[in-house]
Image 1 (cartoon, rainbow, N blue to C red):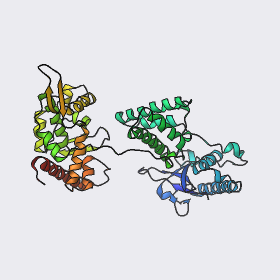
Image 2: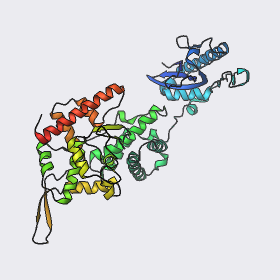
Image 3: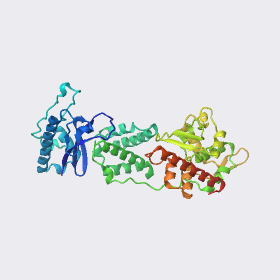
Image 4: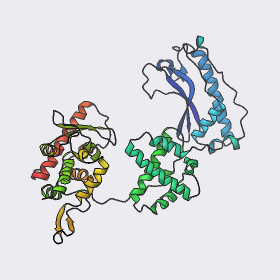
Length: 438
């Protein structure tokens, strides 16, 4: 059964400013809000009695208006129930149709209008438009909201969404439609299944396709949070993924890598890999843009991907490599040698795969490499640190905090305490890997 009440929306911290009073619709276990047009302070509202208090200068008149409007809305809901309309609409449609019949009050406080006169008295809401027209389902354009959402993200994340957009353009063209006309309601479980089959033609990896599906799901969740839509195809469509291969080195592997007699070219990249490991798997873009070590021996930076602040203690092993790899404009000399972190990353990963026994066929002949770790990339440093930390029975909470997983919702005192635990965990990992000390 649908119901209606009044709700003072105090979810945002507005200080001494008044809060919006809204109609609160409840239908089929879902909620939707509709502004009344009135803003009042907390002290001017009695939640239990659903009335303005005497602290508001026009409390009597406005209470009469609200009561009359409440009666009108309940009358509408009752008639729609009798006509079996309620069974065929969701809470958003209920709200939108009431809004169509019943414009906001537009009540103003004294000081905002001369003499505090109440504007726009209640409008009649009968007769109704024919249900077949009035209850035509409103559709929301998908790609416009997709673009709006992507624009709020970091440059790198926006690029990932742009890739998803290109796949959507290709799929809609394949099906004889246009992306610009795609609505949220068009994206059904069957539509998603077709999109997945289409992507599989050029992207055999389920995990690669899952990235695009998760992007679409995130946009749906965003639109639902903004009360734009109620449809949600992901209730019946499950995003498929496959377990990734191990991307971590064992303790013995890292010991071998750290001491391996590399040539002068690959030694540079091996040292950088070890530095990333000593700095708890710092991301490449963040490593490139480090500027200094603080007086208390830490690197502090804001992660490019998430904007979250990090503080990592520079252990002696890391400090030795920083001295060796020190740059002119940056802490590490990466951007002194490469134009950007992506260009560097390609060379980095290629070089890591070339660490190993080298043979040359004859004088001046072709060089061949038997790599120690043929699939090694920079990401393995981060995964390896976490795997080794777990093997030392370091708590999952500490490992997660070290890697930056989860949010900061605690006080600075507890944040400092967590940092100390992370420092201790990193020292234990390094001691075990390099010196065999548990």
